[in-house]
Length: 397
Image (cartoon, rainbow, N blue to C red; front, top):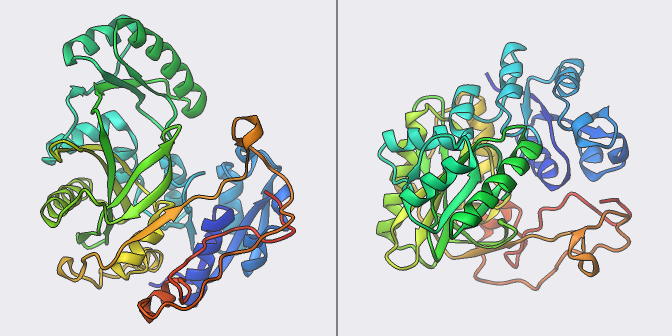
């Protein structure tokens, strides 16, 4: 049965992207917002809007009871989480399942299986996916960390089992740095994710961060899309992404894609997801890093080079439809890149810089005869430029 009313459990550009896609499919939308976001663009775009709490995210966009109450109050049949906030929260998905509200994403079982970095590596190994040499288990003390690091061989990566976004990660080159990394990472992981568990694995020198977008349906079908390279990062967070990767040829693309599909099938995964790999510049060997059980910020460049609307595919999967494409239908055409635009203060070490948007102008370029008309269906303008934004002039960040 097609879902007709969708609650969007997010804000900003991804909420606007979801609303546009839903409206294109004839679905009505409900936005949620914190008190300070009442005049935001995503609120104005939706058919209905519900306030879910005060400004702190923990009391609004991360407030599971309030989000579910908003869905029930408005008669929403499904929730689309976007990315961030509750998008990878298995407990949230379980609550929605209990309330018989659809979650536009994977089920709680698959999400929980892949959301734990230790558990997901064990599953990946069972599925025949290349994994980084390391200790697949929980590090329980600084001495244990040193013992494991010396057995693997320096340098090693010490990182949190839960969460993401570059938090709780340190490279250690010797015993002293391993002890320090254990203390810092466990504390940061506990503070950020309420889960201080750590793992240690071999640090791949000169690595490239390459990820495979997958899409699965509820009938056991899974597809992989052309890879994205996300190696240009700051503070372990992506800044620029490109598709396809200049390092990857068709043979490597197929090998990585097939392993990503094998992993997804191992856990019965459906909807959009991304399997991230580290690829060595030297010999192009690749290793499973983690799986993100949601749509990524950088999904538009995959849409650009594959000619597919991933958001609409997510809705189709949630409606119970089979994937309309076959693997042979998907191959990269052209090249695309994405750049993030941050609200930061460069005079203060690039810390977040909230405030009013006094001026906002999106790029407008002249027509390019080489841009196919099909890209305009994916929200690219006639010059091949797409801006995914959740702000406008006079709004607030």
